[in-house]
Each structure stands twice: as C-alpha cells, then as structure tokens.
Length: 395
Image (cartoon, rainbow, N blue to C red):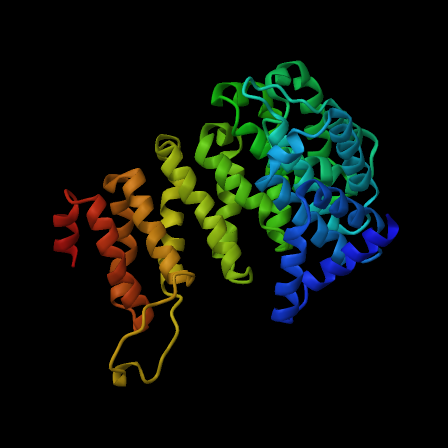
C-alpha cells in the first residue's frame, strides 16, 4: 500500500507541473483511477506527505472530488464513511500549515454540507463536538478551523440549532473577545456574521445585541491592520441583510467609517470597501440613516473629495480616443456611491448638501475639483428631479 501511496503522491506532483504535456498525462492517469480509490489516496497523501504544498493541493482535489462525485461516497459502507470522516477531523486537528489547514477546513465543510438531509438534520455529530472542543479548549489554530467551518456552513446545526444555541453563543462570544489572537477574532466576525444572516432580524437583535460591540471593535482592528478584509466584507453582507441589528452601534460605526474614508493613508481598496459598507447601510435602512442626518453632510463631502482623486495626463488633449477610467479608481467608486446615496435617501436629504458643497468646487482653480463638481450633478439629478430647478438657478 505504501508503494501505491508513494506513486500517487508522485502523480500529484505531476499534476502541479508547469509542463503542459506532463500535466496532461498526469490528468489522464488521475482520472483513470476509480473515484472511491482516489478519495482514499488523496486522504492518504494529506496524512503522509511532508510537503505542505502537496497536502494543500491534495485537500483541494479531495474537496472537488467530493463536490462532483458525492454519490460515490454516499453509497459506500457506513463504516467506511465513518472512518473517512474521523480521519479527516484527525488530519485537520494536527495540520500545522496555515494554507493546508484552511484547505482542509474547506473540505470538512463540503462533507458537512452534503451530510445535511432535507429535513435540516446534521448527520455528523462528531463534527459538532469537534467544533465546540476546538473553540473551548483548542489552540488558536483549532479555533480558526472551527470558525471557518461555521462560516462556510452557518446552518450546520440544522434542526437542532435551538438546542445548541447556548453553546453557539458561548463559542462565538468567547472567540470575538479573544485577548491574544486577532486572527481568532477576525474568524469569529466572519462566522458570527454568517450565522446571524440565517436568523430573523428580530431574533438577532433580541439574542445577539451584546455581540455588536466586540464585532465592531474587531472590524476596526482589521481595517487598521489592512491585512485581512474578510471581516469587513462579512460586515457588508450583514449590513445588507440585517441593517437594524447595527442600530445600537451605528454612531460608532459611522464615525469610524468616515475617518477611514477621509484618511488617504489607507489603501484605496480599504477606503472603498468602508465606503461600500456605509452605502449598503443607507440602501438597506434609509429611514435609520435619515434619523441620523448629521452624517449625511460629511458623507457627501467625503464622496466629493474622493471624486477629485484624478490623475493628470499631460497629452490627453492630443489623444484620438479617450480611455475609460478603471472601475476600481476612487473617483469612479465615489461617483457611484453618491448616486446610490441619493437614490436611497432621496433628493430632499442629499440635495441641500450638494447645493452647499458643489458651487465652491466649480469656482476652484483646480480642474479636478471643477470636474468632480460637474460630475456630482447627474447622479443626484436622477434622484432629485423636483429639486433640480433650484440647483439650476444656483448654477
């Protein structure tokens, strides 16, 4: 068996070869192996290989194979399935490489997803126990793995979720407040956001209000670190689906967001993502923002300022064709955000701030400010046609 496993590991290296001919031959050999054997051989490579790259690659292939050929695994003897699942959890727990561990977590998530039946039952009790143990007594890496699985399969507890709710809350709250491991806190934000979006908004507000403070602190930490944008993206999704859950922390969130958007020391992609969070809240809960109208003026000002972020091109007048501005440029993102802000809150809320901010821009000696001022009118005009006559007189 060892010889077969060694040969298969060599085949995996061929599949990763930059040589097209060698890789094509390897793919033919790989696909010729019966699926049930491939499943075991891939699991064996994860267990025996000393190469972290090969272990991660084997985990990716294993997940794909389970996704595309689940029925083969599903009809195997129950004893075989149980041994396979037990080995998978064992390998995940002992994996020391971050990349390989993440790929293994994804594979475990794929198995869990497929083990859920149509009635919401989760047929892998050992996994649930594994997750709780990892978060309660495991290392930081084990906690990240458990939270990653919950993020991927937020309905993993199925019909028994209410029975586990106390343990779930304890697991997530402790992870959100982990004093020593920011990666655990970031993973907990992603998992908590995924879990909350599966709840009714009233239930989320009633049962998880005390989670908002550490979640906001974690999002702030991830933005300041400018490393992992996953927590912030998860928060955008949460804002879209459960905006009213954020109401108790809205002041803290808006004040921090406006500071980040205004701070040019942050990378553009981070400023734009924070701007996306703000606009998503405006679109999902416009009434909530209208009641906090003190933030509308600074939002408009910051968007107009970002719209002035244009590059000088000395020879632009001599070019036959004008190139489109990249969609990831600050000016494009800000103009789109202003359009969405006006459409969500309404012209009456946005137009007064446009009237106040734009005329000085049109009189500026800087062409970028004049350009941004002119470009501010079309999106707002669409949302505030009744107020346009007043703008026209100002112009």
